[in-house]
Image (cartoon, rainbow, N blue to C red; front, side, top):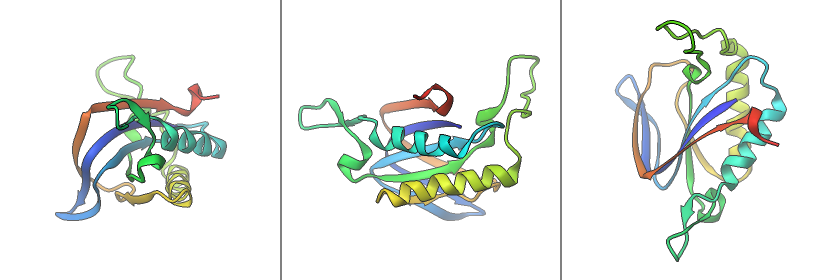
Length: 149
């Protein structure tokens, strides 16, 4: 699984001119599920993201996690993160997981955030979404479950 994690002042997602998810201070997370990803990857990735010390403390140092600040999360599925762009000019999506499996894993990822007490909003899996992100910093990380211990 691969996630683009952005520290935000606010973020929202709109589908068919209707806001379906909106947060203030916290993380905007774009999540891609790749073939071969396992359920264990969900827990590894969730724990890494919620505990990343990327929020400012009283000394203006990145020392606080999402859990520390009681921040929110907007989690949006994005199959294009699993694309391969090495050959040619058209991305290949052969590495993206099948939609039914990816949806199940995405939903479990969201549930694990909620289980940890994070106020969580989502987009709509498979929908065309307009995402509004007010990135704070900007602070952005790419976190790949295959690179975690």
